[in-house]
Length: 640
Image (tube, rainbow, N blue to C red; front, top):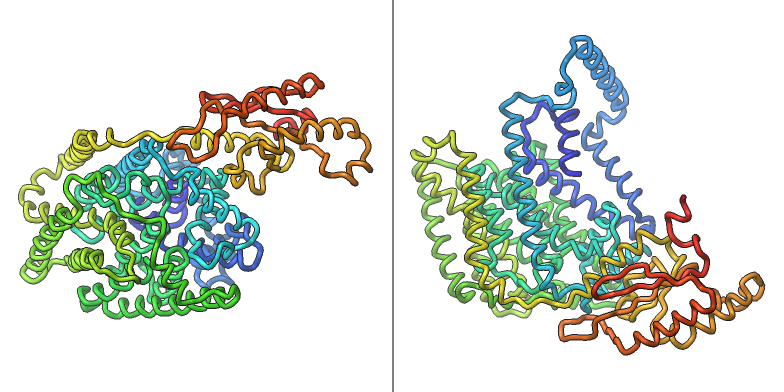
């Protein structure tokens, strides 16, 4: 989808500008990603949230952003003239018998197109590596169907009922984005929740490449190493491998903060005036505040202060504009959360305190090659060395390393902050955020090495692509070779939760909503919210045969069924039968002792003439379908 939008942008809109994929993703995510967050919030408050409304409003804003408010009255004429000109060019090129590639390829010189293909390869490599590096941990996942997973799923689904603050006043922005992500990609809420952690990892990997590309003179080598290190380096990063697939509001908020930080230090990147920058900052900071107050207050604000002290003089005005936008965003968030606390009778100070802490975040880094404290000492020494190099280049060579210097100072600030014992600062969250900023330190260090070996680097300009490929292979080989031992220490978890999520996705795509019921344990009830009826095993074994008898006896007696709706059966009933009992890693209650009783009930239904068939079967689960009204529940049967 992103690549298709980039193609349309280069083909018909910004074909005169030189923009690569990483620029496009970072800038559009900064502008329109934060806008989507705010649109979802506003539409939920108005009670009109759905995918269509979000897309229509987003397109309207993009339309205004492209033409500008002053040119909106003339926009129709501008579009019609552009269409006429393109049609004329099309006819002319057809008459000149231009090759098909001329009409398909974007308007750019061959060298720029070659560079763009190279960046496309790098982007694809980063995306694939980041995705796979997280996917391989599914067999060790402890998050799926856990208590916090189910609670998050209920909150994600609750946005469809136009409710934002349901389980108290909290930062629900990330869960709202998960809901939108599920709608936009046409996947179920549970799959969206399950895959959000991977999506965040891929997004941050891409953004880290872009950050190093912008704040240093290295455009490929250092950015590529940084992106890959974040994806595959687990033994030198403060990450919780056991819960590495868990989505984190902290990481989603940082994905908005990273572009804001770079643009704050290098305002010319956006190619927009101060008014547009001011609006974009307000949108981004407000979106961050809706996602994670901790990131906005503890991470972003110190960076703004450090940035204005280290940035060049010509950027001071735009820095002050960004700080002004930050203060306005705080006021907007104060009104939002203050009003919510007043409405629900919650204590505002208590809300702020709880927002700066995270119950779900903890730091247990047993997988690190050395202790966390010793590792941070090494990184601090590296940052000091890089700071000295940056200062030398800034003052002696008059080179622009101010942005890199800001990130180095900021890194040391975070390390110091992680050691502060305060009830208002969650040091676990600070340590997790260091997992994003440590790769930036690596990138700056590598860029400095390249800078001081520039006389050699320029001589191998021709083989830079080959060198980049060797770097990719070297990083991946090192990750596998030196981390296999720690990887093998991980304990595989039960496969039932993953199997349940997969089969529920199949059920959702196969059956029409509320035309069927599912017989299962209470642990899985949340998955079926707004999708189907739920029957617990106890209710099924005690009452279903009686309901079946009464229903089919009075199936044509509509008056009886209207007076006694408790006997009405769904068109289909799906009965989950588990083949594997409880173990220590199981997160759902699976009582295999009930299996014979379930099978006996199904046999009795067969003897009554009910159609009972196997809908799904794996090594862990077998699902029987009871068709009370054949052909009236599955989507394919209803359509075709």
